[in-house]
Length: 291
Image (tube, rainbow, N blue to C red):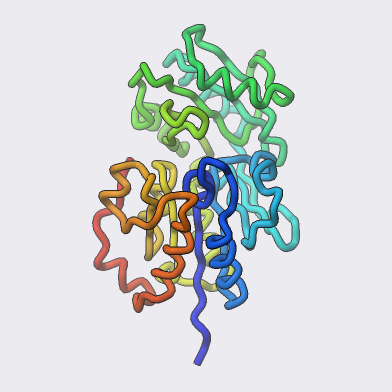
C-alpha cells in the first residue's frame, strides 16, 4: 500500500511561536516526525524572508517558508527562492494613490528578495505602531519620494483609535489586487492592510506546494491564529486555530492549545489520527470564514 502523504502549513507568529518567539520542543518534535514520515511541512508567514531569519536562529524542521503572505516561497533544504511575485510600477502607484487619498500611513516595499527595504509616507497624525515599525527597521527605511516603482507589497497601518477605512473598502478600490487584513504583530491592536498582486495569498501558495508534490487538497492541514490566515484555513481540508486566535476564527474552526503551548503539535496529532481522506471533510465543513 502506498504510504499516505500530506502537507502541513502553519502560521508563525502567534501560532507556532508564542510571545517569546521560541520554538517549543513539543512542536519541534512533531514537525520532525512528520518530516521523517515523508510528509511536507511549510511555514506561512507575513514576515519577509529577512525578518523570518531574525527568529529562525534555531533550525526549523520545515521544508518551505511561504513568506510575505505568499508573495514568495523559499526552499529550506536547497536554500533557494522558488517563487516571487511583484506589483508593477503602475499597480504600485495606483495603490499608493488610493492609500494617500484615504490619508493612511503606509509603506512601499521593494521587490523580493529585498522586500525588507521600504519607503514610507506619514499622514501626520499620531500612529505609534507605524512609528515602532519604522524604528525597528530604521536601516532599511526611507521617506517616500516621487513615484514608487515596482514593489513586493504596500502596507498601511490603521491606528487603534481609527476604525476607517476597512480592508474591504480598500479592496473595493483595488479590485485587481489582493488586499489582506491582519492584526499588528507589534502592538497586537492596530490593523495592518496589506496589498499584493492578485495571485498572492497563503492559500494560493499552499495550493502551489501541494501541486508540486502531487498532494491533494484533502491531504492538506492548516494551523493559524489571525485574519490573514483566513483564506488558508478555508482552503485546507483540515484546519485548526490556536486558543489565542481571533474570536471569529475560534468560533469557526477546531481549536487547539495556544501558541507556545504545543498547539501545532496537537493539531498534527489530531490531523494524522483522523480518518478524513481525499477531501471528504470538505463536504462537512462550515462556511469559509470571511474576515
